[in-house]
Image (cartoon, rainbow, N blue to C red; front, top):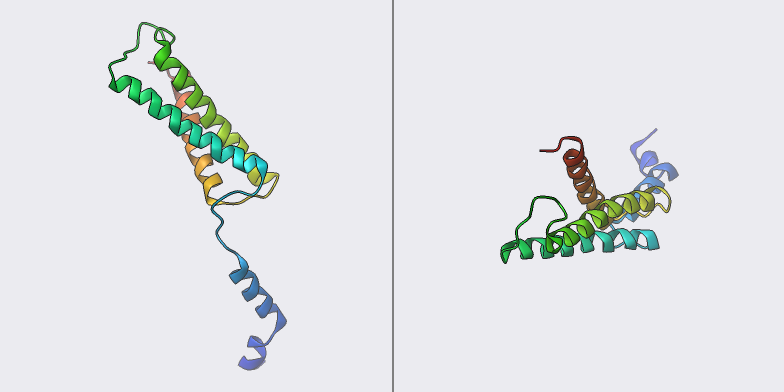
Length: 124
């Protein structure tokens, strides 16, 4: 087979077209993917509120629920981070919605899940 025949073959041309047709998407198109992105944004918002309360002088007490100004934003942040992880996985595997923001929410949600499981399994 000559070099010219290889370049004109349909197999090679279809693969090149598919290669250049792949584009990196940033925003999700599925509803569950959008939920995952909003949940990870909510995680960062409530984590910021939590650290703001610490900055202005709030401190924890004897138990986790002693200071509700710190407990409520932290619980909302953690639950939204974990939910972002699971909704991101669901949107990738069920709706085939592959975009950067969903992968970002999965990574951050996985870190949150590992941190919380570590705190539960190995308390200090």
